[in-house]
Amino acid sequence: MDFSAYQHITFTRRGRVLEITLNRPEQLNAVNGGLHAELARVFIDANNDPESEVIVLSGAGRAFSAGGDLEAVKAGFDDPAAFRVTAREGKQIVFAQLDCEKPIIAKVNGPAIGLGCSIALFCDVIFAADTAKFADPHVNVGLVAGDGGAIIWPQLIGYARAKEYLLTGDPIPAIEAARIGLINHAVPAAELDECVNQFADRLANGASNAIRWTKVSTNIGLKQLAHAVMDTCMSYEWLASKTEDHREAITAILEKRKPEFTGK
Image 1 (cartoon, rainbow, N blue to C red):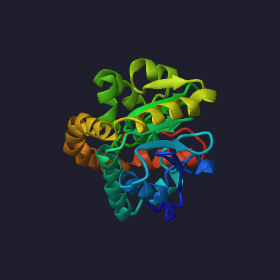
Image 2: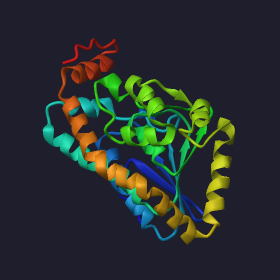
Image 3: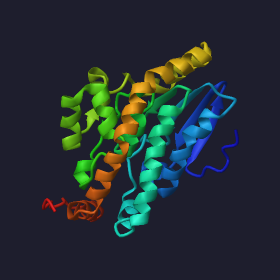
Image 4: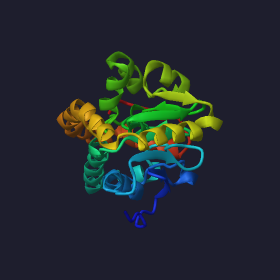
């Protein structure tokens, strides 16, 4: 498979393991328009890659992903067409992860925030450095967790815990995230690569068809849920994106001050 057209994602191979790395380290791998478009197709391309059996997803530098790029969000304030593209691609990201037959292992080396958190949580097995943290703070910028957070968090930690974190945007340290079942493993940062490599190699050397089809079978219910509610989630996020609170939140962050919400 030729991945040379990608500009914001890099690829390396280690035997039958394909390592996919979000590569905007200076921006903490925040997702701008270009990276968002690439994420919408990368899991399809990886699924069709004949040279790999397992996918490892990580972020370059000191973060997994800081979520949406705020400058890109601000640029879309008065451009309805931009959100239509974002919504379509957002659904493609989630569905492509769920449809990918190959196991996807998240290697979370640092913060996984917002969309970055959703992408990590939709992976099949999640390893994180014990210094990492997970958060979906959409509400803190006046938005709805419409890009997948409202779907995946309750499935992993139950509705009560999920609503506590989604309604506040509070971060969860990796060790606590592993304890409550949001992720699989929190390991010392210096051991993260080795732990992921060992697990990825174990899967790559296993009965590949059985592993793939077990993932497919396990994902059936989650796919049904995602298809049932994703359009509604994205629609609510679009409504929230038109509120004064959202505009105020983004402006305040860029101006390095605390937002003043009015409920409008």
